Image 1 (cartoon, helix red, strand yellow):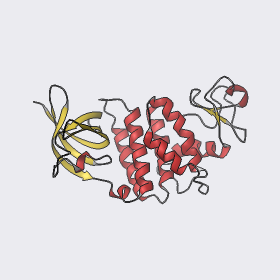
Image 2 (cartoon, one colour; image 1 turned 45 degrees about the vertical axis):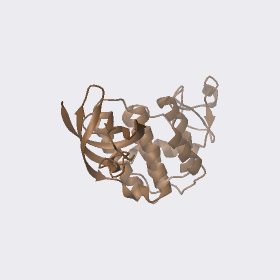
Image 3 (cartoon, one colour; image 1 turned 180 degrees about the vertical axis):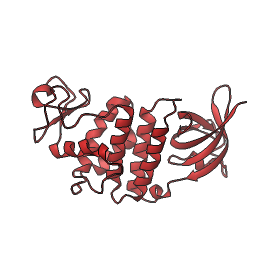
Length: 250
């Protein structure tokens, strides 16, 4: 039976059988993959802690006929700062949900792993975690090739000029009023939100502040739904919690 050691962060867990957990993890070595934590739901299981979402660990994996399963686990980090603050935890779960939804299975993507580690650390320490969440979402969109165009019309290439412009996930970003008529998924936003979003991928770390950050988070969600084509309950919750959050200029 082949064995492999991987560095992993748990993105999602599901119950399996009477006492097991099936985990979706992001690894440096293999990218996103599903693994089985046998007996993780039993009292005193050595795999209980490392099978929680937002846990980082070095895993020994054995490949069986149907699935890879964990034989040993060495915890590295549980991102404790996320677990002691509801807003930070909400942001962390929303972010890992997106990584789980949009990354392909079994394709090594070490840059995505590095971004997730950096982003989760920023969510632990940033004074305004929702700013760090929006920043991380923009970098994930850019890294995966899904970054919308926020400051120029994707149809006409006109520079953003309206005070309340349209966004369209199907179009891929900002569309002028005249171009927007053909996109039934269009919705209005603020120009200030788009100016802020257009700048974020220039920051190596999240800015200290971002104006209308709650609205920015809400505006990104329809794009993620279009990309993932699957339910995103943790992100729905985060948007409800932070939608009306307004923070000073970046």
